[in-house]
Length: 406
Length: 82
Image 1: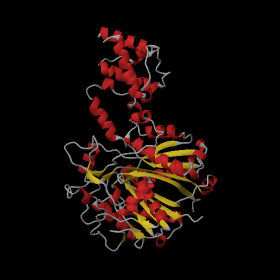
Image 2: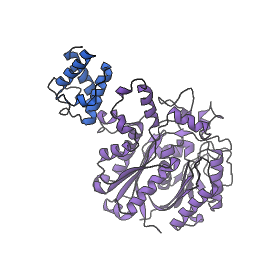
Image 3: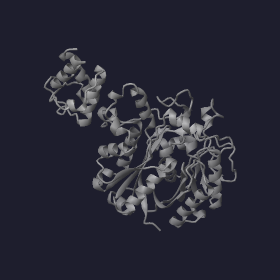
Image 4: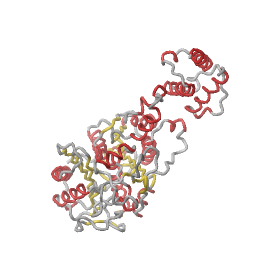
């Protein structure tokens, strides 16, 4: 079994709230923010549905100079990192021993498309900062400059599994003693109308069925699901050893006991029962946990007809029928690159509060025998949780989390 | 376009890039670096001026001017030649 690595800080922003307190309150109240998307560059001869962050509140020390060339993805990263910086008391850690892993690739597409459109006929006047900002690793540069991080920083990509891959990478950096503390960031995926079109054309993004009823469109695991609904979000978690957390007297939320990463050998978006089952099995084996010990699962659950069905089959095959199950994406939407991190945060906050959030629009579950949390929150003390994220290109990831008993 | 107007334009774009300078009284002797502009900020400021004037100047020529007065002179020469 792996040495214990713990999460000692979480920071999050979604369309339903900024900061963990607002985020978890919204989850437990079953709030959503779905509508026809309004952000400039999101629509072109279209009415794509999604959940957008209305406003980001910055602390007073963030200057206009900093924000002027700061993309939406960077702005979201800034506020979630500030949140973890305070909670995990990172000001007390050696900056050379702090790392940052950014989960996601091609995350700033809307801003890039806006610039391309603005300068198509006058490219000689393109802003020089474009030469920096077009790379996702600008997020690493921006964040390490803002927070004085001097350890390692780089991006990892795995489509919608990026957020969980970033956590695994952060855990590995800690286990290999490359750094003492490593932050995993699930970057805000900023889709332009081009990506929305591609994802719709591919059949991944919904909703034709609920075009005129945005509140009903996002319905993972419901019989009337017709694809995922996008949701802007971003999350950060601080990963470190228990010993390291003691040095700054910070309290672990939970420990990461094991994980599984399995490729299907399939470039396409379609899921694989074999891959998902293997990833779950690998995570359980690495954790030394039996299926019956897992009492909560935070599934990938996008609302894709084949994806939802395959995932429940995989859970059944792995003997995970007794665990509580809810769909965070039914409230937050699908954050793509950020989803894995944000859903781990949802899991840890539910573990902390002792309550499980409802699943919106789960009126007729495709498998009614599963232990769903549906219309109302449920009081439950999570002991061992499993979180799942899958990505296009055949990426399957499963993480096992255990409550930390001091 | 005269030198006063050009200095005003440079001041305006310097304030765009460095919002902290709203109260600063710009003079021809001001150096962008002394005002807190790093190399990327300086590139942004000179590009914004070029865009406003619809005139494109090779980067290498923009390294010459030592202060915003000299920068204004360079833009004036280019405008005359255009």
